Amino acid sequence: MAAAKKAVLGPLVGAVDQGTSSTRFLVFNSKTAELLSHHQVEIKQEFPREGWVEQDPKEILQSVYECIEKTCEKLGQLNIDISNIKAIGVSNQRETTVVWDKLTGEPLYNAVAAPVSPGPSDPVAVAPSGSSVPAAGTPSVWLDLRTQSTVENLSKRIPGNNNFVKSKTGLPLSTYFSAVKLRWLLDNVRKVQRAVEEDRALFGTIDSWLIWSLTGGANGGVHCTDVTNASRTMLFNIHSLEWDKELCEFFEIPMKILPNVRSSSEIYGLMCLGDQSAALVGQMCFQDGQAKNTYGTGCFLLCNTGRKCVFSEHGLLTTVAYKLGRDKPVYYALEGSVAIAGAVIRWLRDNLGIIKTSEEIEKLAKEVGTSYGCYFVPAFSGLYAPYWEPSARGIICGLTQFTNKCHIAFAALEAVCFQTREILDAMNRDCGIPLSHLQVDGGMTNNKILMQLQADILYIPVVKPSMPETTALGAAMAAGAAEGVGVWSLEPEDLSAVTMERFEPQINAEESEIRYSTWKKAVMKSVGWVTTQSSESGDPSIFCSLPLGFFIVSSMVMLIGARYISGIP
Image (cartoon, rainbow, N blue to C red; front, side, top):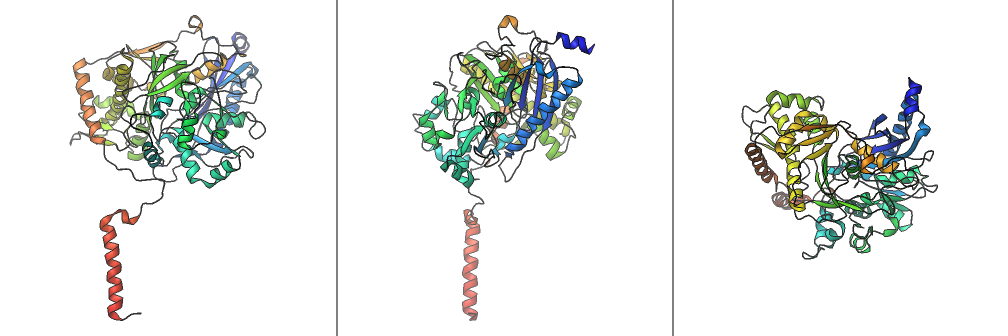
């Protein structure tokens, strides 16, 4: 039986799916898109100070090696020949920033977290069978806020009538993107400063770090990224598809430390495609107007706008969707990012302790079937799309004596759906054509209560593929379709049919609108809770508090006066 199964297997394609909380390696049959085997390794996040989130680049790299090794062992146990793996794709967290020494291969500082991303996922890489490969990464390191004052200082230098940063990159000036993190490293880490001065430093997002390390490292490693990852740095011109000299001068970033930019599907020893772009490919959203939402630590809703670069007037990002080959055209997308999705479930588990496992949230929500007027805005580190409001903080409102943990659990799931509705509304206004349905993927889509709530709140059908690993599948498809590999066709007639589960709205439109408008009221109450205080300059001065300053000064005067009166020398 094992021999028969081996006989019908077509060429295999692997995918590294590296996220902020874990790394995975998955192997697919390129002819059927069947997932044959996979392995997952959890990775740690470090919180050296309030508002700072970091990860160890070497731990991330080691997790990729381990996942590939364990998956290959499992394939061997299934009597599947690993030499049939013809290419490897990579999906990784996009904005997380790494600077390393090209002579020693050692990171010069921890990876500084990007402000958002789902579970494992982000670039796509390809390599011929037998090459030393791997790559990857993504999820809650995006809550790092150390660069807020950097953003505020930079924003003062942008003319109000000429936002050249957004017009060139499609991105608002935000702590979310790599350029300000790199600027922080150059300003605050002496090892990074010295390495740049001595021409030893290389910069990259997680894909670049992995590709360089896995293709030789200090012994000739390939320093590259793909257009989707580059488009999230705020240094890349999405029109010319090149690093932009004016942007680099604005952020004071030396261009010599930047990686070479490639397409999302070609052989360079290893190549990459951002996780959300990989999910867009995996969902087969190749047509203008098709959209998908990935539910992980955060939520990422992308809409394919084709070859047209659409700039949002409603708080969304313009980004590169994919470029599937060196000579192929680039496709763009509008993206809206929700910072807190699955992370709110972990918060209920780890901080409040009202659930012991993430899966319990569905059971609690099902017990009551309503939030009973309770609304939860999980703006733990501010609001992202479409508000981009760093002053917001999380609130739970509408509480009564009747409210219990089940209602709060239900409200937490509703919060994910309401945030998605806000992004979808903005997307509909920018594109001018409302979506008729929403394609979904990611770990949270296993929660049927959440999926039904999403259909009710959007008031359109929600469509979920039976094979949920669409991000890794997209990475594998891009790898397998690369020129020189050619084991996976992306022609519509050749794409495998995927079984879908469909969730239809089960409430009336009026009720949906009432619940949504109440959510919007709650969001407005979350705004303006904090005023920015630089997290870059250490502890604030005690004289920031005027009453405390007066107290200290007056106490010193009284002490000196008492010593003078008493005659103490």
